[in-house]
Amino acid sequence: MSKQSSHTGSASHSTGDAQAPRPAADEIERQARSAAGGTPAEISERVRGITLQALADGHLDRDAIRAVMDAVVKGAQQGAASRGSEEAQALRQAMQGLDEALASAAEATQLALQEAGKRGEAFSHEVLKQTRDELSALESLFIETLGNAARSANGIARATLQDLNDHARSSGTAVGGRIRSALSELTQSLADTARGQVEDGARIVRNEAAVLAGLAAGLLRGIADRLHPPTDKGSTPPPPDQND
Image (cartoon, rainbow, N blue to C red):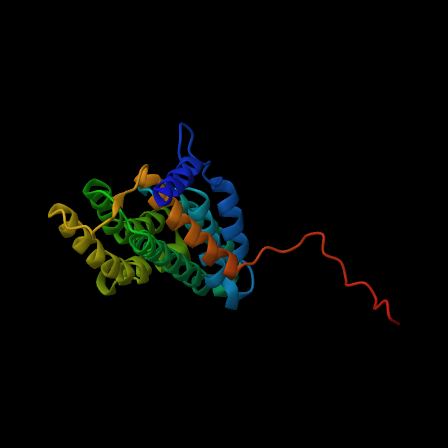
């Protein structure tokens, strides 16, 4: 009883009449632009962290993910364009970071389902099906974003994005590989719920879609924080040793 009420409380924190505000597209663009124009060796990791934080601060639904991807790609194009002969390399690294971030998002959803199962809780067939459908569309959404960006770009950016789009279609992506693993588990969960074979004692979570999204967002935020730990803006040098 107490286990269910604790999750109901967490759900009410992340749901209600007003959803948590999505990160502003112009801020995501600015961060991605800075990352793509920064140190070459750090581009992929910085873009991954920016994307993860934006996804964690919003909602893992199709429209939100599309908006984040569009902003990241736009900002990365702008930043890469300032690199001269390194433009193509910078853009490739940025898109690698975006791909890896989306893979982390798929993994976070899978881990959230596993965590709920360990707590003796279950999600309804409808929510599991919705989650499966959204995950299934994630790779195609990434590839579509690359294609749209290529068509609206020109020069090196257009050629690079089109090449990335073609390669993703023919050889797959990091997010695609992670999705296949998650979908396998989701398919089994759907089969179990369809037969009514959830584990003994498992309870359907109230506000379950919000709870699942909240769990996944929390996992993403943890990954993002590990990539880019918050800095203490007010930090000062340590005081001198008082024993001197």
